[in-house]
Image (cartoon, rainbow, N blue to C red):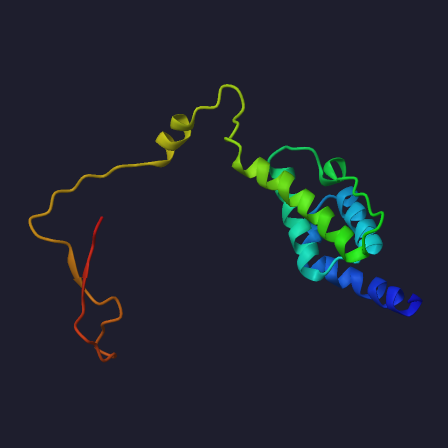
Length: 150
């Protein structure tokens, strides 16, 4: 048992980097590392935790260590405990995802979109047909015509 735990702890830094957890703030990364040592999360589970933690940060929600559930592990195997824990975190995350978007006071979406769109109206006498973008004297072409929709 001790050898297996040591083996997991040796692999953990690589798993954390591969899962993208190195993009998290140091305190959150440290917390997930501690929980990974305790619950022995798989690579995929670490990836999911990293994505959830990053989403919580982007959404200005409480960080993952503040929403970490207290799971009763009495009478449950370590795998069942881990599954309950992850299901609880995913449920919290999913609830936030399904909630309507909240924007800061004074934010209007039209103010931003109007700045990005620049309309140019040019009337043409014929359809916007063009030749194949790969066509050149040095290539063998199928004479495909493209339609410029915009």
